Image 1 (tube, rainbow, N blue to C red):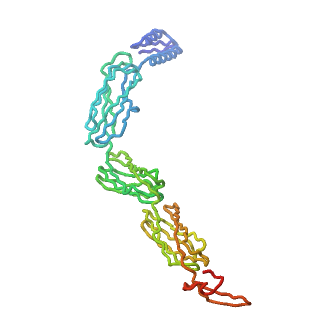
Image 2 (image 1 turned 30 degrees about the vertical axis):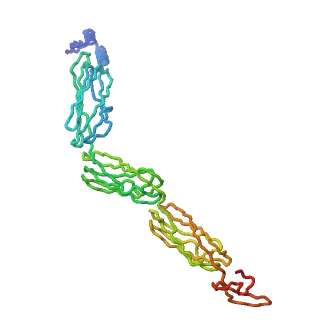
Image 3 (image 1 turned 90 degrees about the vertical axis):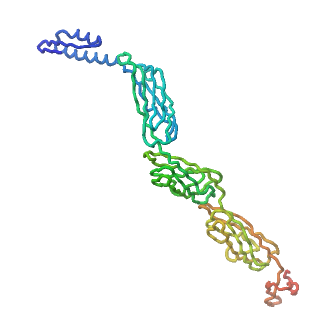
Length: 429
């Protein structure tokens, strides 16, 4: 290109063009023009370039759509899964005679070839591919190669056959620790705070092992997550929690184990165990009632034996009698016992007085046992029987005479004579 500058600027330009747009522009510019003509020339060049850019079409381009490509599950040695491979034509022309080949590798078995046919511009195709991981495959990150062969078109519209693209798809092979976990017991009692312990073994090393316990039928006392740290292969471990069952019946407990495998990848496994939650676990039985023969006007010492035949401890236990005539408590009708362990027997003693007019018969006295399990209160109601027997045996202990009246004081001393036999009137036998 040559230029000469004077009052009337002369411009001489030579271009090698492939389109008719620039050829016409050159014809128009082969004459003298002033400075304003030069500015107009520049504007025309810009407009011509924009027209050429708008009319250019992108060539055919086959790619792997990584955003849409996915695996249906995590893969460990010995596992199989589905790779949903998505290929896409991102070019402006149609792709034809498409075939896709995925060769196997040392860590991944695939070896599949697909003939797709053709894909329009902007279209995509999903290929479900079975991927198998050998049993002896090392854990960690690897990849499989996807080769796409096709016939397409250049941006000029000319045919471009035997085109090929190659893409590497990353695959994470996860470690398989093979956790074995067993609970120490599966029977618990409602509202009874108890220990839930698991014994575990794993077959592969893991780091930063954490265990989280959850269930719909009990509450974990304290933290539900336990940090166990790094574990070696074939290492035994135990996990212990304090729980409070909240509902009766069969239910499940879930232990979620989260860890880093040998490749440093975060992984987790959820283990489920069946449990049985029964009633409170405390069962109070009256094992013995003892007292000396008694009669009206006497004081009787009643000793009551109570046994917890359940499997849980009864806390803050209180035993009380619902006393009514002809009985009167000497000190108290309520005794605080405290905790009663499973299988434990306690003796509770009450001192009761009978009124003089007590009928000779057997009496039922209501007995109440109150206790707590895990902060929840329970009440058990029972009855005990006391037999009031014998005749009233009296002895005159004092006689006073005043102003024509006689006062006689008598006492029941269990003598062998009755009041009538003693010649005392107005005193019942």
